[in-house]
Length: 410
Image (tube, rainbow, N blue to C red):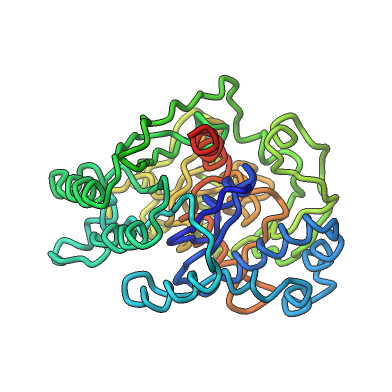
C-alpha cells in the first residue's frame, strides 16, 4: 500500500514533487498563496494524466492549445480539491474538515512542509526588529497541531539555518520541546542541496521527527560524488533577450548527462516559460560591467559602478547587489521575485537576468513543471516568487527515499 502524506505550507510543491517521485501519495496540499495553489493543481493534473498515459493532454496545455479550465476538466474534482487554499493557523478548523473529508478512514503516514522562514532568516530578520511577537515564529505550533490531530509516524520540517540560532536558539528549543510533548523524537541537521545533485550552494535545516516508540535515528544521506555546474543547466536553452514573452520554444541543443540523469529535461521536445523580465538601459550597462568584471575573475562591487549609473547609493553594505551567475553553484534566493540583479545571465550576447526556466533549473525543477499565476498565460512574477521560495525537488527526493525506506521497514 502506498505511503500517504500531507504537505503544509506547500508553496509551488518542490518538496512534494520529490516525495511523489519516490511513490508517496499526497492526501492534501495546504497553501495560502493563490497562484501557488494553481501551480499545485496543475502538477496534480500532470501526475494524474501521466498515470493514465494521457500526457498528450498536459502537453497540449503547456503549448497553449487548451486553457487551464480545459486541463482541469480532465481531472477528478476530488484531486483538485486536495489542494487547499487556506491560511494555516487562522483557518485550521476549515483545513481539518477538508482533509478529513478526503481521508475518510485512511491514516496519514507522514507530514511534510516548510513554514515561511523570513522571521528566522539572518537577512529577513532585519526589517522585523520592532516585531517582538512576529506570528511567523509561531507557525511551528500550528504545524504541531496537525501532528497532534493526524498522528503520522514521521514528519519532515524544512527551514532556513537561522531557525537554529534566531533569538539565541530559543525558537528551535521550544519547537523541539513542543514536538517531544506530542510524542516525537526530534533531530535537526544542516544540509546543502549541492550534495544532492542540485546546482547551487543552498543550505537548509531539515528537521525530522518520528514517533518515540519507533527505534529510529536521523537518516544518513549519501552525498552525490559527481558535481555539476552552471553550463550543465543552461547550455541547451535558446538564446533570448530581455522581456522575452514566448511561452513555448524549441530546445537549442541536445540533452546532456546532467539533464538526463536528473530528469530535468524529461521527455518533451519543447521548453516552456523561458521568459524574462524587461530591463532599463542603465541596468543593462551595469549588467555588462558585471559580466566583464567576472571574466577577469572578479565580482563587480557597488562602489565600482560610476556614480551616475549607480542605483543603490549605499557603497558600504551589500556591495554585491549585481551578481552574474558564475560557473560555480549560484544560490537561489527569494529576492529573485523582486528583481534579477543577483541573477545576471553570463552571456554578454544575451545581456539580461535569468529566465523563469533557468531559475527553475537552478532549483532542479523538471522542464514540464509549470508555474502558474492567478491569471493565465503570463505568470512571470508569481513564478519567480514560487521558485525562489521552493525546496529543490532533487534534494526532496533524496530525503523522501530515506524516509520511505524507514517507513516500509518499520
